[in-house]
Length: 151
Image 1 (cartoon, rainbow, N blue to C red):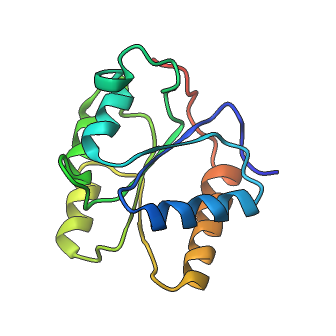
Image 2: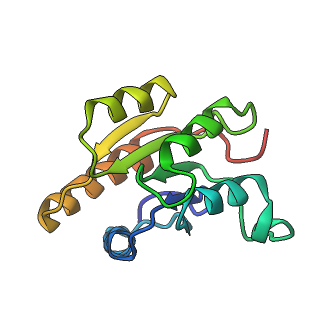
Image 3: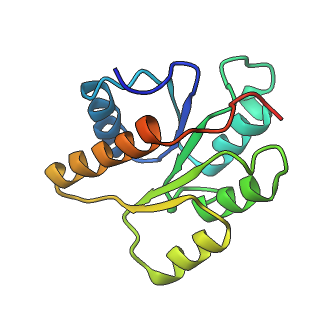
């Protein structure tokens, strides 16, 4: 078993196939962190700020880590990152970009917004498994995360 059941992960991913692959790999690796999914940037902001469909919902806990794809419908991942990192209550949550975009402008913008990691999402399933295993080892086994309690 890897991870911590009190440190939820928020995955902001619009692709059902990509999310399912990620989720299955996490399960096979024995990750015990609860995993929540938002399918676009607007839903993610509602989740984080407890607005919209999450207004009275206690099932939207403060995530310990946020994984975000950049190319999302509606509010894109770049804008979600910008809002998170400018918010005094959310900016300490580690944000990891997991995307297919190798565009140098995207990489620069994301680091300018203070993301904690930028990971290219491989198309090859074996490389994807290795990439997610590396994420698990580093972020869920090695790193000490900030307290997930709202500041």
